[in-house]
Length: 85
Image (cartoon, rainbow, N blue to C red; front, top):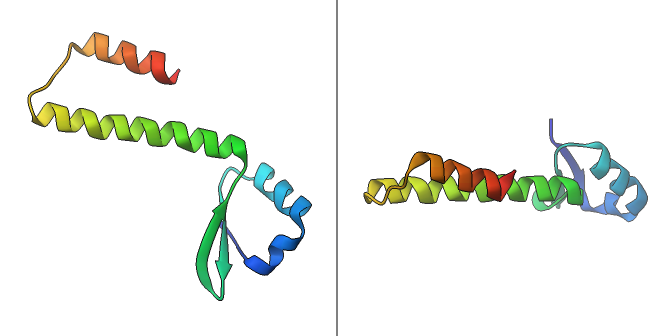
């Protein structure tokens, strides 16, 4: 379940840092009852960046397939493995 906290609670930076590192989810910060920011550990951010990159590549691949621009599957999977793993 996502953590949600008001912006005024950001004063205790050590506690916020501990929460970020002990959670596998971002923390959503509200201001006047509305969403304002999202904070997370660097490790979680890097993991999410990698996922976003893969999703972007999948979206591009689907577009290329619909345009008839295809590659050999073994070569394409090999390139994906080299890039992300």
